[in-house]
Amino acid sequence: MRIVFAGTPEFAVPSLRALLREGHEVVGVITREDAPLGRKRVLTPSPVARVAEELGLPVLRANRLDEAATEWVRDREPELGVIVAYGGLVREPLLSLPKLGWINLHFSELPRWRGAAPVQRALQAGEQRLGVTVFRLVAELDAGAVLSRDARVFAPGTPAGEALGALAEFGTGALLSAVEALAADPAAGEPQRGEPSYAQKLSREDGRLDLNRPASELLAHWSGVTPEPGAFALHEEQALKLHELRDAGPEAAAPSAADAGAVELLGGAAILRLADGGLELVRVQPAGKAAMDGAAWLRGRGGRAVLR
Image (cartoon, rainbow, N blue to C red):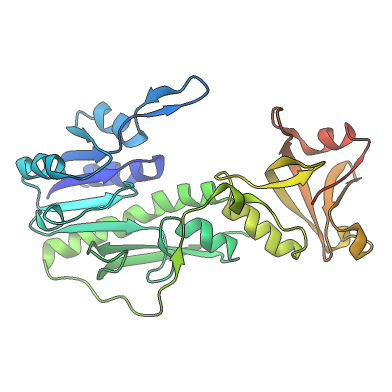
């Protein structure tokens, strides 16, 4: 099938590779414009742009799918548009331009967690079953008919970045199934059923952990904001980034409510003591410093610190 593909981040790359591996003809790739990265703000191609160019595919860099982008797609005469985390809206007339329309690989079991950050918000909510859905793109946000879906279970405390990477590979099966379904029946698809929920984009403040919450909820919150926007708590009025946490069990609970938020060395590990359990600070980053071993940071504080 002649396909135009739109995607930007690393976790869109497996879908592009899967379509090619299956023998589909990717006639063009749309991705976001090169962005400044790193301390020197060097203009850097998106992961999708880099891979597409390595494969010799035509690439359009565009932050908006405007009239020029529509004409670029029209010239390629695609039968189907596939979008995976492109980062922009597909509107008419581009939406109806491919004969079979556009399909989107979304990282949730729709209609649950429509929106920008489905994996992150699901993990924050304590969910361990994470899904993928391939649906027909329509004008309403993530509301089109479902072509295929799948799901798998992740261990508590799995960081969102790791879960997204796994789902990106896992989701290629659902994507290829959806393309096959459309090839067999251009009218394929079932309406979404159930009450929708929404996954708003994360802000830096979403990364602040509430140390009054139970340990399991705190670990879930941490997993949903790691690595972006990044989890943190305050130590001496400055942000302490928490790059890696691990459940330390109920035996590490604070002796009293007044001690919740204290970090102490227990068995050579830096343990954040909470009302009902503890979390090991495996890797942390103090303000203005490089990331370091949590126990080493705590020893530099005399073996005890208080977070809030």
